[in-house]
Image (tube, rainbow, N blue to C red; front, side, top):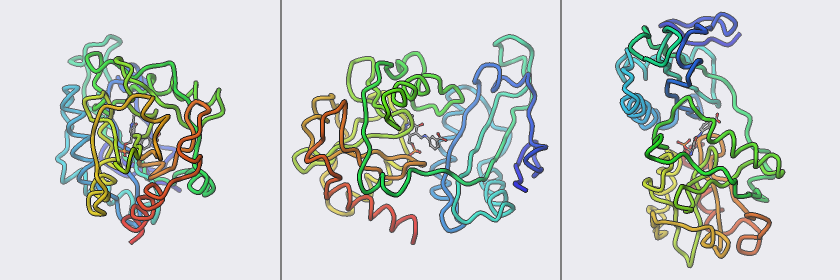
Length: 284
Ligand code: PXG
């Protein structure tokens, strides 16, 4: 039986509940992280905790636990579930309150830690690559809600995801309010253009992905030139290679956008090299 950390203790999955008055449920008022577990170890836990506390600060939610205590609780939840390879979902919600937006009328932010397995793309996807379409739903305007906040309010991404699945794609490209490339619904995007690895900068209105940052580090170590630079859809259409990064997807090749093949329509050498380096990093 899976154990979930809720209200400061580990309980059976069936007993792990929060109030229907919780503003996380009523308004999407809360923040979360999705983290991988490789070989029993929580991957890049410090980076994920830093982002969680930043997201919380950005929405003016004080997490009633220190980072060190939350790290320890995360590790013990993983251990209690005997997980070797899996996935951790950390959720901090505003807590139960009255019916009304006012966060001052809530009490007890809830800290929830779920440690479970994750369904990944089938192995073929990593060999053959996946197809993308551009969603007509643009990413949230950064002045409406910063994409840097990993909030419980994912409807913007879900609407774009539905457009993708309607078109037979497992991911969809999202542009920002300026028409520039932002990211996919749950993954960051990279291209290889004239030998340079390029990805949109954080100020394109994207989530600063932890896998994105790890891949940038791996590329620099491999002496591959990297640029965080504004990208247009045109740049993807004419790129040599394209791939996505994310906690769930890891590094996954993209072979077409809007029905147009990218490069020769197969995962390229830089993509395969970085995918291999990422596997070595996580499986070592
Ligand atoms: N952009 C968005 C909008 C995301 O939600 C990423 C990029 C990649 O970030 P990381 O830090 O993971 O490299 C994400 C991450 C899920 C799930 O359960 C979603 C994400 C991560 C893990 C699980 O759908 N999104």
